[in-house]
Image 1 (tube, rainbow, N blue to C red):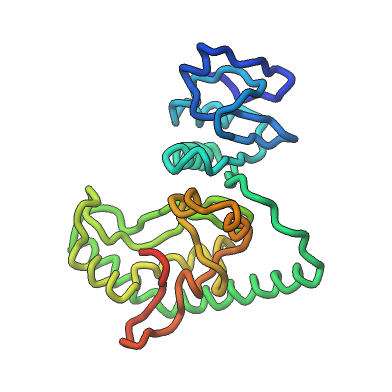
Image 2: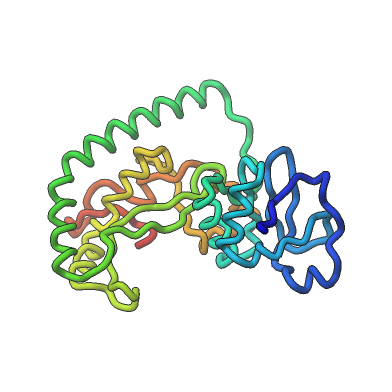
Length: 254
């Protein structure tokens, strides 16, 4: 029988034996949100399924949780475990970071206009480069077997985790960069598919750095508020050319 993640009315104090079995995190229920925190003394049921991703998926699917917030202190490994589980269970997942300041109505209107601008420009640009992307897919089929795209966890607006999309540049075992992948990295065109993230509202054309989970875990408390902002192309990618006339789409991460 699958154990469900349940509201606090059914919580009890975790025993020492239970903590020894599963001590990497504690859970706290808060108004439909599940907070996944570093180990501590809180009231909660013992859930052995927390150590198994597939069991965790079943728990989340059968729970009344509306969204999950994860403490960055848990580390990159457990963040990925929970992110993958939440993705399969169709539950939105966020990093637990300091809240952003209240934004004015004028700022909200500006963001709506910027979102519209981003969507239109990204769509037009995708249509323009679609022949290039199709050729790259065909070349990848010849160059090396495997999937055409990679989907990497990144941190978006208000700490929400999403999958950034890019062309695969390594072999199936991810131990060697393919000849085509080396060329795509040289000109940074392996990041063209990230325009789909812009269409989905997960990135902007212009904005701050788009952090990976590894980078977000290492951020100090003073830098964590930056994760509240919508990450952008400029700085994360830069649409344009560098001094060597190379197309430059991602100046921060490969």
